[in-house]
Amino acid sequence: MTIQALLGSIRRRSFATRVAHSSRFVSPRFSNFRISLSTLVLGEHKGGSIEASSLCAVEAAKRLGGDNSVSLLLAGSGPSLQEAAAHAACFHPSISKVLLADSERFTYALAEPWAKLVHLVQQKDSYSHIIAGSGSFGKNVLPRAAALLDVSPITDVTEISGSNLFVRPIYAGNALSTVRYTGSNPCMLTIRATSFPTGMAPASVSNDKCIEKIDLSAFNEDDADGKSRYVSISSQDTERPDLANARIVVTGGRGLKSAENFKMIEKLAEKLGAAVGATRAAVDAGFVPNELQVGQTGKIVAPELYMAFGVSGAIQHLAGIRDSKVIVAVNKDADAPIFQVMIKSLSHTHPIVMLSSFHVPVADYGLVGDLFEIIPELLEKLPEKK
Ligand SMILES: Cc1cc2nc3c(=O)[nH]c(=O)nc-3n(C[C@H](O)[C@H](O)[C@H](O)COP(=O)(O)OP(=O)(O)OC[C@H]3O[C@@H](n4cnc5c(N)ncnc54)[C@H](O)[C@@H]3O)c2cc1C
Image (cartoon, rainbow, N blue to C red):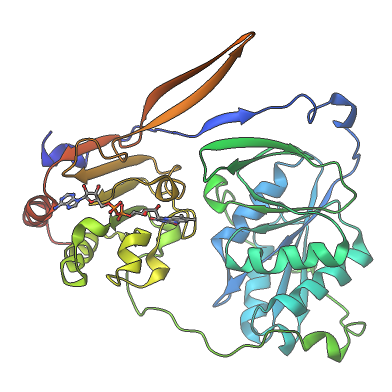
């Protein structure tokens, strides 16, 4: 296979196996038990704009049912909150209402005051669903709010099949489980942003009428004093695209051998206008900071092109890349799982239980070779980024 073929056309490949469709959980008895739907989406904003993951959560909310009215909850302080509200209102009619909690308590998105806020809003408006993106913000706030509301959240949803029927990955993304929510309202979800498009084109005119300020007088002063407090925020000063939303991701694994060698990955990413990713082994070895880790315990990515160099393809890594459109792998070991994983399956044909196994391709394009020869060749052949 040639170097040129590595950058070839798009072919989608999915290696998760759908396993759990238990009829016990999908009885039609429950299918229409909610008549009217209303959803609260917990919105994250930065620099006056709504984060892409929150717009994906709005898109997910729309998929719960046709007559769903979607409210977006924004909290913070200062002019950037107002700007974010106006930005959200632009997305009308998908968002019917923008709820604003304007207070210095929410300047930093700490879980305790946010969870209390969600509780307060839910007590007043009784939403049927509450949704957040499953990034750090949603994973931090939503379970805490669910505990206050005494319901069990469903996390990391990748597909919405009805107002109470959801698909989510299990076993590090090796299987998809279909879950029916049978608890009381609200049904609380975190959704995997890479599985839902940001969807909506902004309307040309902002609809200010749908912005509503929340009365925080019932919010006790004590409520802001949680178990956590803001200390500082630090992030890498880089012009590269954000890893979670990048169109192209170039990832390096332990095969790079050192932090110095990892700079080749950074150079390649720069030429391609790509984000840099890393395996946990590369992060643990100190080649790059852990915010670049991709996988089950790192970031979930879904780029158009995912390039993996010196990555074996451990199942925990694959869990973070399964929605990538094209996967390209370079590894000197032809038997590396990044080229193909083996799936074992048990089939029950009474009275015999049979164990069968089959290989599922992971990489759409695989090159068996030494990355220390291939990356310099790619760097030489790729044009400079304009
Ligand atoms: C609970 C749990 C959670 C985890 N979460 C994550 C996660 O989120 N993300 C993650 O990545 N891992 C995660 N892991 C770790 C995971 O199991 C693997 O250990 C890790 O992904 C391996 O990283 P690697 O592929 O870089 O290293 P290795 O498995 O050591 O593979 C290195 C590869 O480089 C190849 N190579 C070496 N030299 C060259 C060369 N010169 N040219 C080309 N190829 C070369 C080798 O053939 C090999 O295949 C998790 C593990 C656990 C138990």
